[in-house]
Amino acid sequence: MKYILENPVSGHIEEQKYKTTIQWRNGEFITDEPEKLGGKDLGPDPYTLLISSLVSCTLATLRMYIDKKGLNIHDIKVSSNMYLRIEKEQVITYFDRDISFGQALNIEIMERLKQIAEACPISKILKSNAIINTTIQTNLLS
Image (tube, rainbow, N blue to C red; front, side, top):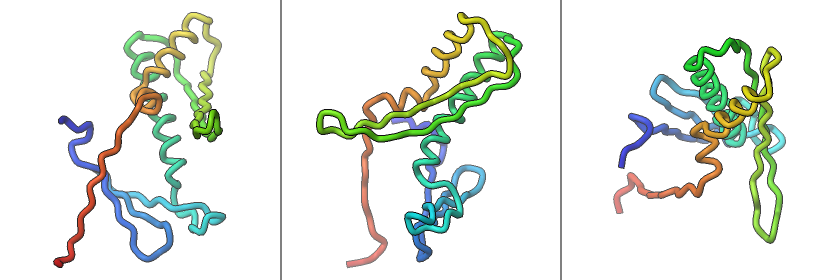
């Protein structure tokens, strides 16, 4: 098995309700829940992080393609949100993603850029059947 990240992302929570500290390869950041859910809104909540992953991956993937093809497109904006809907007694997650460019583009280029956005790695993961393997351990001796 080959992991995507050289080192895993890790985090911990202490006594402050819902405030977590997440460590990544170059530092750390705080996540929290909104005040309406009992947190203090000190950082993004898990849904915001998930949606941010889609937004940032879309932007980076589009930029890579645009640069590789030598297209003269400077300004790209992506916004996204998600919602849940019950369909056939199953909860389905929908992501809405809006992409805009700071200039007029022809239809063929726009369609190709939409295909590229759909192919960003996070889009592919969100559309696939992901499997989460969980292990649990304790540092306490019995």
